[in-house]
Image (cartoon, rainbow, N blue to C red; front, top):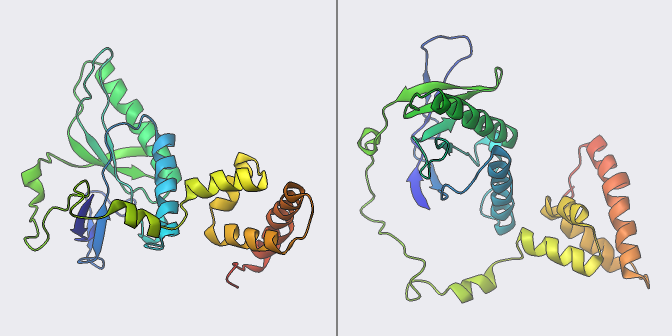
Length: 253
């Protein structure tokens, strides 16, 4: 995890050749960048990881994590290996991903593009590419990006934070303060209420919906707990959810 400041963003108007606009409205806004190991094998897996991370951030109450509003951004680094090779090839970064659907499609396209280049005996260029939502392709934005090209400046007032050092932070104590996370809630909803995996997942996607469901359950005085939970789930996800969509209401309303 890195702590950074946003510097702005580049915009590439559709139909304008060789034109880039610079938007500085978010310059100086603090952001956290989380980088994974290169262990993700598909666009679908990357999108699933992004969705789960979004849920965790919301459950912790530390971010809205709305992709469409800039609260969460995903920039995918894609590297392909030649057939039979053990090491991954050149890294290409994809930007302009403003939805999980775009994340999935862009990564899968880029994997296919790089494999075709390698199969033809050519080398993949080190570059940043953007996702063209209309044409469903990645296209080159800029090349030659080594560390010194970014002109990074470390913040002298913030030292590296080592969370594996027990003298730095009490992990067990911190864990006790963390609310129930999505994975735990899914498991509990299946075990406590007998919900099917897909039913539990539907409720867990919305923290307010999950809370409302449990409030309903607490008011039901039925002998068969699983039957009453099934009835509550069916009513919420059909009648109530449908009514709320029609009236544009949320649970807080």
